[in-house]
Image 1 (cartoon, rainbow, N blue to C red):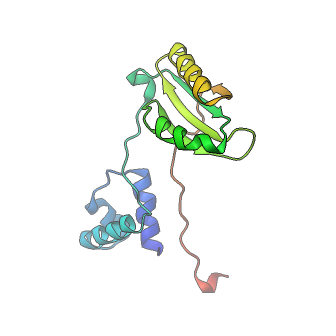
Image 2: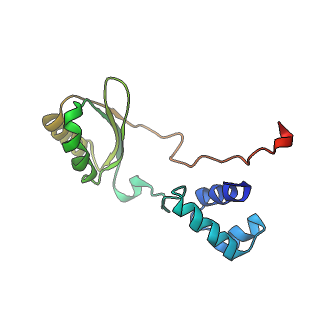
Length: 153
């Protein structure tokens, strides 16, 4: 990735709906060149998709929580497909520590969250849950710095 690719990634992270014309103006190259670079970034797996950021409370999901699950390695084969099928699980990661999985979930109510936790505990075992009161930093991209010139070292 060169300086222009990094700038394109930064701009798309800030606004995935930016037009080729807008990106072209910011990067000082033609729209076809921007389109070719975006295609290259997609094929390389650097850009993996384009997403909308939704206010979950405004669509009825008032409870956000993080649930940690203690899994045995043999349980992962059943756990992963199950968790992928639950739309309320917005992210799930395999992690180090006492709990092997951590999920970010959203539910309309604490009753719905409790029902889900009970199901997880019955099927897979011990959990630990933290309900979110507020979010100080929402999901965001990572700003890519321009590569340093050899002369700058």
